[in-house]
Image (cartoon, rainbow, N blue to C red):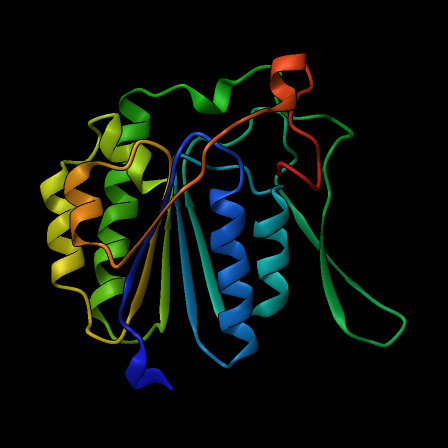
Length: 206
């Protein structure tokens, strides 16, 4: 099975669902016994559903974030146990809703430093041969915002381990990145509840 891996996916566009698609693919890969590494750029909220869920699939998935932390979050995870005795990680935080302050989306020098650290890890993950699937979440945005040169990401794609499947997500994917990808899916927004004043909802948007 693994000898057939090694293609490059891009999920881009201004519609909702790009990260969700990548997480769905990650879940599918874990279910088939593949090892996954998810690296999120410009995201640092450890309370997101995908980050919490990933803790329950260790060691088949590694999940790293390289973005600003939420100023509201209570940074801790607690380990509980279900009735069947299966460990389950649950996030402990104040009862807050995401979406109104936007502090974590401020892009400045600190964001650039975090992106550089994330990219260094991405290079290791994609060349090591240790992972069957690597997801670089929001890396397209990092390129669009000029935090990462397109040429560096193209070089990463061309020099990755041959049987590592690679996913790049985020709106604004450049032509250069799309040209070297095998899959390009563009999510187009027709409607979004944000335009009605409905902010991000727990369990749906994060």
